[in-house]
Length: 169
Ligand code: FES
Image 1 (cartoon, rainbow, N blue to C red):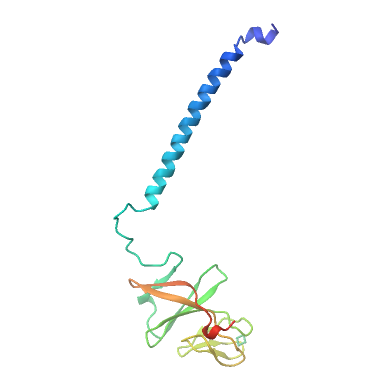
Image 2 (image 1 turned 45 degrees about the horizontal axis):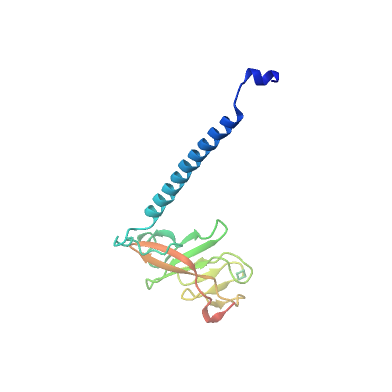
């Protein structure tokens, strides 16, 4: 017998059988834990049959912008939507409607702003109507990009892009 084997007299056949048994026990425990964990997560995310629906009617992809009380009629509120570069403007019109647009002017991209009567672009005196974002003055020829707005339980939410009015590109 080689030198190291005399120092560590291990019966390899016995060692192999024990390892397989231990490995099988380990696999069984891991499988049981994994199955239990998946089951727990499924129960947590899915309401049980007959459970009441969630109280909020807010769409899952909506972004809360502000409280409705924060923007009185005739005023606006600036926010970002998809990312920090996606600058948008929320307008609470004097008539009480809520409108939201991307701030990017469709002429050369300056930021439009609310002046109490409509949306103006200071770069080349462009103007857009607040109802649908159509250009009404100056060089812009395409409407602003509009966003869907919901007011739910006193909170203002933006849901995403509205189709361009009149099928404009
Ligand atoms: S960039 Fe807005 S009018 Fe020219």
